[in-house]
Length: 205
Ligand code: ADP
Ligand code: MG
Ligand code: MG
Image 1 (tube, rainbow, N blue to C red):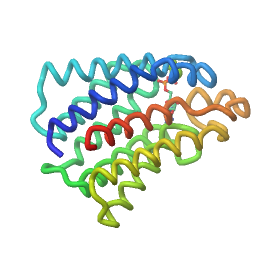
Image 2 (cartoon, protein in one colour):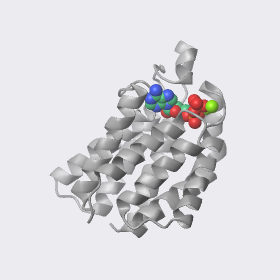
Image 3 (cartoon, helix red, strand yellow):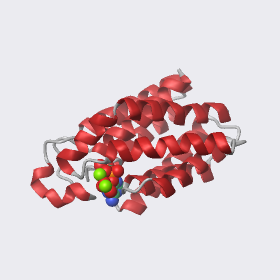
Image 4 (cartoon, rainbow, N blue to C red):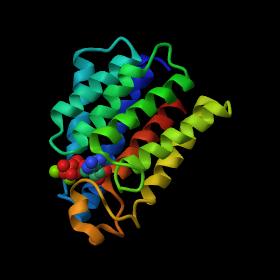
């Protein structure tokens, strides 16, 4: 996986988020403040601009650049949270990138967001999609699965993790203010995390 694949990842994520912008915003309208789709769409557009303005020379640089841009340019909670995932991943990732190296760096990114957001599995956040994806990658490495298959499994785990937030009661972020009324809605950040993983599966396919 070279630098171009990582740039393509963020291009594809931007495309999927733009396509699903209204759905993400509607999910956030139900349990938040109706800005998640627009927040991420704007953030990923800025990521694309930054990557074009200062072309990165390694996969790690793509990730640290994207992370820094999301932290700087997205007003909502999700900017610093996604930003910390990618920035940490970028710091951890060594070139050349192997599946095991990617899985390890991704795990570090998930740990970073869990620390920053003080969120754990089951709190109805993006962690509920990211952590299962990370686990799927670790299992794929253990089982010697190929890169394409591994990212497909991670994308599936993230999508299932996002759907699994529907019956959860939110314990972190704005949705937690709703208490019991947050039950019955998919978490917008978990939904967008599933799009990031779908984008990755698409670019390695
Ligand atoms: P805001 O809530 O500031 O408007 P967004 O709407 O862009 O920000 O993002 C909301 C998403 O951020 C939530 O759906 C959730 O997945 C995620 N989130 C919020 N707080 C936390 C947290 N403490 N830890 C992990 N994820 C969180
Ligand atoms: Mg919001
Ligand atoms: Mg907001």
